[in-house]
Image 1: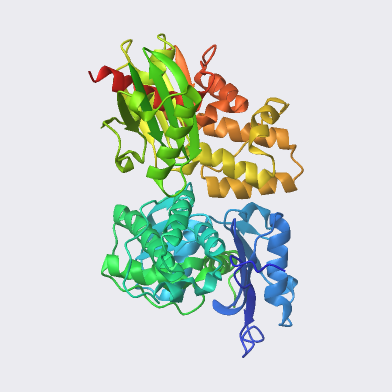
Image 2: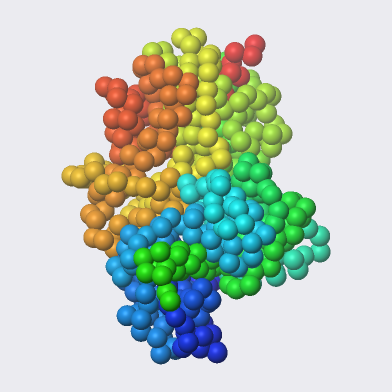
Length: 290
Length: 257
């Protein structure tokens, strides 16, 4: 069977100390993105389980599957979860959610949790969009800029390149630094044109890693322009799947001259984490826990 | 006097041989990765067709994205200028020329003399050029040449959200999964790209008669979508629309006396 290089690994996790057992309240957030879906369960505002998987063609199904998988290796049941918040592109399709909240708000709140209250600028590089968000010490959004029209700087763009060069998506970052000299970036921002350009470079004899480097460099620059337009205030944190791509992150750091904070948890779950935290706030408002 | 125009495009290289305002022959070859070689090959093809030698040609002018690579050319001009000259030679009534090629879309406002009054170009985004239709044909598994006629059979307008070629591919797959008839999807795709092209054209102002040139003009579905989007009675399309740039270059060669 042909290997699908663009297919990143799906996974679930739970707290080995089973923090949900003594929890007063469980809340959950489900982030249904156009490419991936994350479900996060929090116990009294602490992370206790999550799952991340590819969003299928059926959004409600994806939400359900991700939630099931997050709960799978625990003894928690969906009924025990007091409040569920849906977010992301498919947020209206979380049938078991009590509410839905926009992903901008959830990412800022989630970043505040992951990075701490010092974070003021969040870059979310998701599957099909890229957002630059300014927030306060509580994770409340003060301004944002979004590109959701163009694949450049998004996960889908990276998947296209992984597929083109037959390199597993998770390895792109490291391989992009295994070059003799850092090559210039590809000249096209457009993923489709960059692909054609990449084929030309390979024919000229460029090693694969150099092509990866050139593409990561162009993508880093592209998201940098988005950040520049919004204005960057430190501290700076990155969320979304591409936060795990050192090829883009390191080059972005160089261009910005600013070191991004290191996340406490998997940056891809930030949206769902924020949603779960909103769930807790909303549940406490309704019926304060004694 | 016999002149030659070569349009070195991103995907294909076109040649037109002109004598006293009449097109004698044409040649076309895929550009590939060696632009000079492609130009020579297309030229040889056109000369062969016309029964001529290179020595019969007074002057060769080039245009297109690869025009710096043609060492044997006597002169060069921009694609926009070439499009205007070529179009007006074929139809004196044109005042707006829309050129949709493989990787670039252009809207040109022309004067009656074939001069460029204003223009707008998209060279940054694949969704505004032929590459979009090609990518969609792959995603739908419909041969490229069947896309146009298929879209004309559509009975329902379907909304498409994606602006980007990469996202549209995913959206198309979702629509197919949801059992949307392919005819309707194809029509939506043509409407989408026509919308983008027309937005660009409105930046220079649309004045009739409107002409459409470039390879994508072969797509009857796109022509229909463009006509509806522009809200004009008709859009003029020459018989072999991809050669107009090359013809314009040959016109420029003849004018450079």
